[in-house]
Image (cartoon, rainbow, N blue to C red; front, side):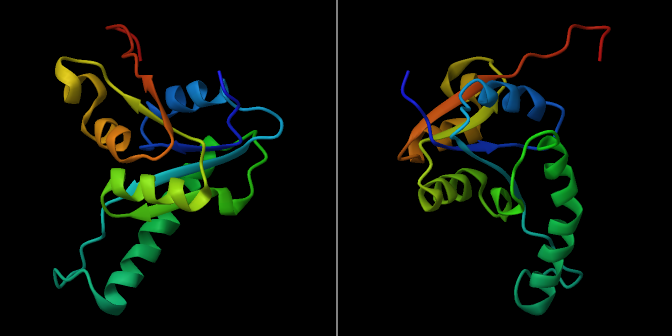
Length: 149
């Protein structure tokens, strides 16, 4: 397997994110540059408009709410704050854009396996796979056994 220097790990900030990060950790070396990203939907303002000062204020509010949650996944890792990314918009598009901007060698994301390509990988994972200019590792999310959490 090739060595990955810059890894971009896409997290949805649910309990599944720990499994995605665990999969990514298998690729990390001491010389790796690890980046974590979460893509949120654009906040909706009280006026229903997503433009102007209210839009920027809404994004700042959401970013301030989500950043500690993303940072919690980096707990125990030495990641500079500029390696934690909160973006807004279409997840596959934003993730692949950031991967290009960072010069990422691999994007790591998660997916629940079901039936069919989109269901097998998930819509977001499938779109990332098709849009990315770099390798993509899709970590299979395993559901907890019934009766456990």
